[in-house]
Amino acid sequence: MAEERRRLRAGVIGTGTIAFSAHLPAFQKLRDEIELVAVADVRAEAVQTAAEMYGVETHYTDYQEMLRRERLDFVDICTPEFLHPEQTEAAAQAGVHVLCEKPMAASVTGADRMIRACEAAGVKLMIAHSRRFTGRYMQIRAAIERGEIGEVRYVRENERRPLTMYDQLDLAATYWEPEGGKPWVQMAGYTHGAAMTNAVHETDLARWFVGRNPTSVYAEARMTQADSEIPDMLTYTVEFEGGAIAAAEVVNHLPRGYPYFHMMEVIGTEGRIQAIDPEQSPSTVAHASGMTQQQNFPVLLHVDEAYVREIRAFAEAVRNDTEPVLSAHEARGAIELSVGAVLSYKRGEPVSLPLPEGVAVDD
Ligand SMILES: NC(=O)c1ccc[n+]([C@@H]2O[C@H](COP(=O)([O-])OP(=O)(O)OC[C@H]3O[C@@H](n4cnc5c(N)ncnc54)[C@H](O)[C@@H]3O)[C@@H](O)[C@H]2O)c1
Image 1 (cartoon, helix red, strand yellow):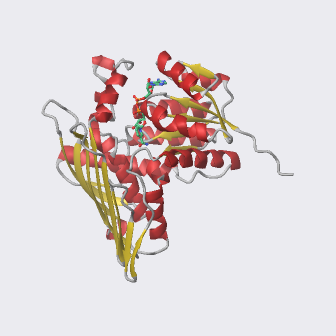
Image 2 (cartoon, rainbow, N blue to C red):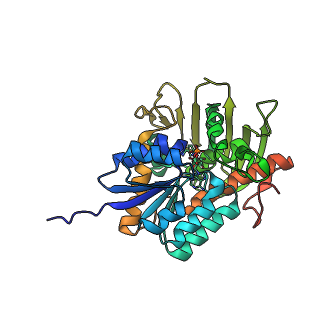
Image 3 (cartoon, helix red, strand yellow):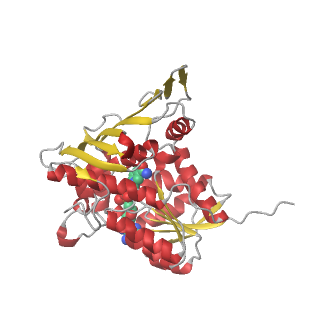
């Protein structure tokens, strides 16, 4: 008789927007494989609501206490990125594997701290780049791997979203007591708007589809709002080893009600792949022998299955003691490219990659 699989014990740190909208529902779907034993958040009311809504037995306002008491197999970090390094270090020191929301950190140095801490403690670390687990992008990558479009030469991405994220950040302002009285949106990471929030999805996808390291990035950024200090409109071009290039346009501060939109085009020596929001358009692969259309996918954001897949993929790596499918070094690469874009638009010139050690977005 097959041996019954033990359910892994997991905890969530941070029960804010992404936890409520994606991670907690995904854990519910995975309850036969993973037991979400505890949730932690500095906001007592939010964490209590999360526990009640999702039937989680225990909740904490101090995540360190959760790490000490709960004998977790892994923790899922859903807090703002400037907290990811210290929370990853704490989990690693407690011997707990770490799945952590993107962006990995607000700086390359922060990403390195996370990798070092997990390597030293012998625990696994995976960054939850949800797009890597989204059907549309998995298909594109599979088509590239099958050689359907030859060698990738050009990746073009376009992502636009409305103001909602900043409405959500108002919620954050109510709990975060920042140094020097600054609202948290001006803390590390959020100061850099599009480049560090959603462009990190694009920098990660471009690296994934090209399959080579970037050698330089040139970016321009603008503020969409006259009274804003956050550059929410970003364009950049990236050059990769071997000569492929990528170009992206990322805007995350459009008028309320403007639809989310995402467009991805990958051009290779022998064909082209395109996937466009909205209207559930299918992705289309065109190559020398003709065109194929692939299944419809819903508009990009909150593709529920992506979160189920990513949590399950990490849990399986923990259970089987294998490498997570998405290495932490890959996620670090996406951060480095985003940081390079910030440095480029600040300096008004292309920036060579890899970046020198210790360089920060504020340099
Ligand atoms: N994968 C995606 O597509 C996606 C989408 C949205 C957000 N995110 C990422 O998820 C992370 C969280 O974003 P969000 O929109 O949910 O933010 P949020 O502000 O809505 O939620 C963050 C939560 O962290 C909690 N928190 C803050 N400090 C804490 C601490 N010291 N200990 C415990 N909890 C603490 C807050 O109280 C809040 O509930 C960010 O890094 C963001 O970029 C990813």
